[in-house]
Length: 75
Figure 1 (cartoon, helix red, strand yellow):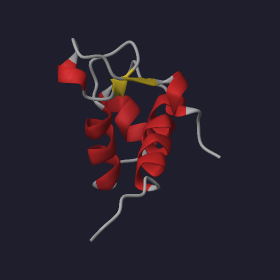
Figure 2 (cartoon, one colour):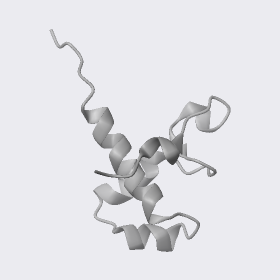
Figure 3 (cartoon, one colour):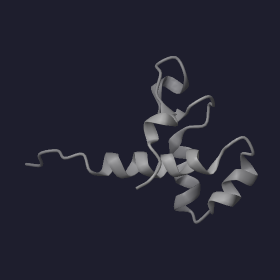
Figure 4 (tube, helix red, strand yellow):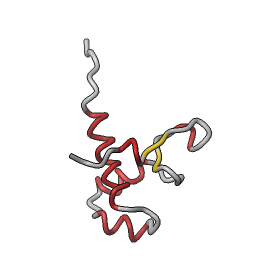
């Protein structure tokens, strides 16, 4: 199982208009997911954002996985 995303991701109304972000930073989860979606490796993301740790990046994936399991009724 991936990282416990709640340990690494927060959302507060006063920062980035409440968008989920990596705790202690102003880096939105969507930015990291975008890098991963375009084929960037964890190592390449860390080169771009040296303050990030592998666990934080994995937490972004775990967060996205959990959101994808959310069920809504489609009519």
